Image 1 (cartoon, rainbow, N blue to C red):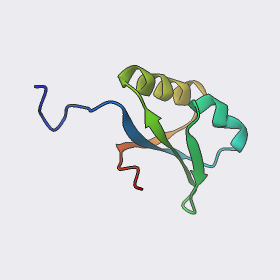
Image 2 (cartoon, rainbow, N blue to C red):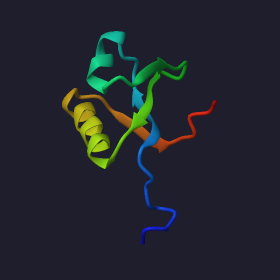
Image 3 (cartoon, one colour):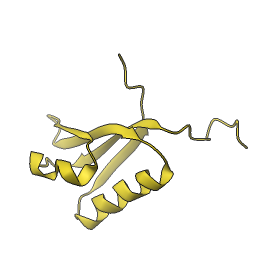
Image 4 (tube, rainbow, N blue to C red):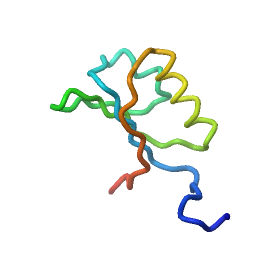
Length: 79
């Protein structure tokens, strides 16, 4: 179903929420994505993901680093 709402449009801007705060040193692990810490104790990693293979690689990295994934969302990057 190429035109279904579930069809991903690539590239896409993603926001990946992780449990806990991560240091800036981890930025290189996320291929140039930005990270910000939230008051609720989570970290948001966001940026452009070019295709599904890159998204799976990012999720694999999160697992390999032992981080807890809270959510993955496609978002509008804004202005």
